[in-house]
Amino acid sequence: MSELFVTVFDTPSGAAQLKAELAKLRSAGQLETRESNLVTRDADGQLHLHHPTNIPLWQAVGGGVWGLLLGAVFLSPVAGAAVGAGVGALAGRERGAGIDPAFLEQIGETLQPGGSALCLWIDHVDEAALMDAAAKLGTGGTVIRSPLGTSQEARLQEMLDQSQAG
Image (cartoon, rainbow, N blue to C red; front, side, top):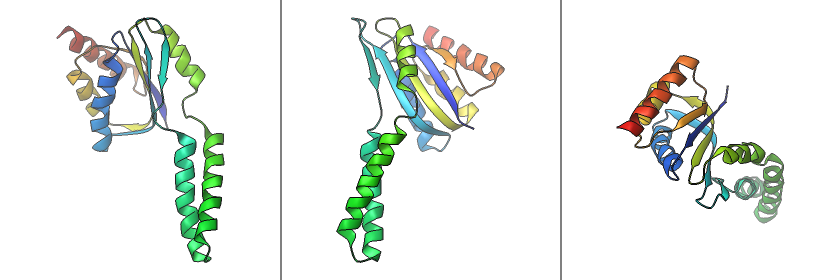
């Protein structure tokens, strides 16, 4: 079961720092995400949504590779690659972003100027590793929503608060 994890920071770099810490968990297999987005509000109050990738582009590349392989089987690799890329681009455009951009804008509207937020669509997380990553974080944050139970979420919030104080 996938869950949404949203943490808001008063600093412009807080969300990026948490994302960097969580990247270590991802590479260790302790965190699986479908998507991660940074939302920032600059000092002038301008909202910025930072999407990780161009989904239709990567779908087109993947479709092209599969089309090339299947086309080679039927002795027409160029045609297969072209058809595969086209189908992949269409599928990527229809799929769109995983986290609704309107939701990301709502999160952004709650940010103070100079604030940031990290929004993750999580498939799996090692809760103990997440707690350790929060304890290492140099800036505090506020957990808005998480895949954790209420007691674990309260503990995570406590660790974020302590990291800001320390």
